[in-house]
Image (cartoon, rainbow, N blue to C red):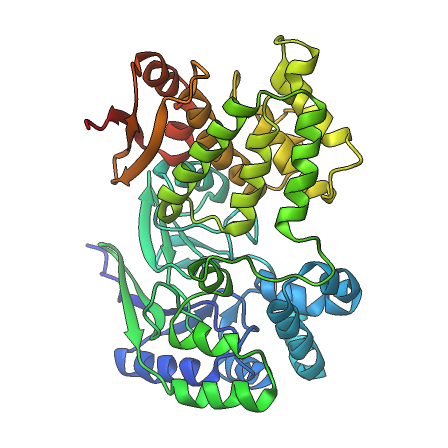
Amino acid sequence: MSKKKQPTRITLLSDIHGNLPALEAVLDDAARAGGDEIWDLGDVLGYAPFPNEVVGKLRDIEAVGIIGNYDLKVLAFARKKDKWQRKKPPAKYAAFAWNHAHLRARAVAFLESLPEQRRRTVNGFETLLVHGSPVSIDEPLNSQMPTSRFAELAEAARADVVVFGHSHDPFVRRAGLTWFVNPGSVGRPEGGDWRASYAMLEFADDGLKVEHRRVPYDIDRVVRAVHAAGLPKEFVDVFRRAKSLDQLAEENHRPLPRRHERAPDRRLDVVLALARSCEYERAHTHQVTRLALQIFDGLKNLHRLGLRARFQLQCGALLHDIGWLEGRQGHHKTAMKRIMADPRLPFERRERTIIALVARYHRKALPQATDEYFCELSQPDQRRVEMMASILRVADGLDRSHASLVQSVRCRVSTRQIMLACRARGDLDVEIAAARKKADLMERVFGRRFVLRRLEK
């Protein structure tokens, strides 16, 4: 009879984001819980002003580490700073600039030595360490993503266990024979719980056990350090309220301000000017756009896209039918080509491509990896396009008769279905049939059954 192996316990950390007090509290708690190794999944740098101290601590405890996308951005700051100063919100730019200016050479060398991925075999479990996903360092995997996406990633990972961070969302998911584990964020938790988040993994003969843990820390020390460092005051709310800058901005119903960028209403003026020049059907277009934004807002806890994506959806919806100027046949592809080619639109290539593809996929075939322009995007951006286009398809179906019958839409989401309830005037049979037919992409991308019903007056 073979001898039973002793379980191996791993302390799993991610997204420390420069928060030394949180890291110290977690390490103290983990020491009491017992552990054989410490793994760190990247994004060591960030919003709290202790970058060198955090790097030094990880080096001293000999953590098994990988680099995160935020760390790579800080290391690339000297090359990117001029572009980022024009494009990034001031608070985010300030964090990059401060970290770059204060990061010591020894810390830089340590971070540059870290790989983007590692493999570790623990008690027979082949384990892959990544920051975002097995295919992209900046793909955010969260607890609301459909199992089908995890199944695709399991195929790519070829591992028994995948551990990852980036989304700040602590959860466990299994796809086939592969476990996916996110420990949450040590230094910048989200979801309204400010306590540091990490996980204990136990690899034993009878399987994998995961324990998510929350630890209070000296948050006042972080707040004092933020003020002393001269960092933006918004960072205090990031820590105290456990929300990202984007989430805080959304709560205030305003986009993050950006240096040297046209305001959203100015860009919409240009978008509408293009639509008018293509003789767009005003009533239908604005009805579809209104419904698309209602659905986007109703599903925000599912898709977790921010205000920029909402604006991109708005632009794609306003332009989705401009291809009609050249006839009905293939008008979705014509719209895409017009958006890509029109010099008046004030968008860089990536954003222009996203908007053009959202418009294209409002009808006909679903996105394919080899499609024109779609193949140029990163996998996270491809998924953004799919989510936004899935919303636009349903919204377009809800005005199939071009009679603006649907007055409002409410959304409810469960683990198995997305339900839309419509308040409308008149006979809605045509709209309901069209929306159900065009929900194919929504069902695919969110891994849930689409249900549509009419609210009675």
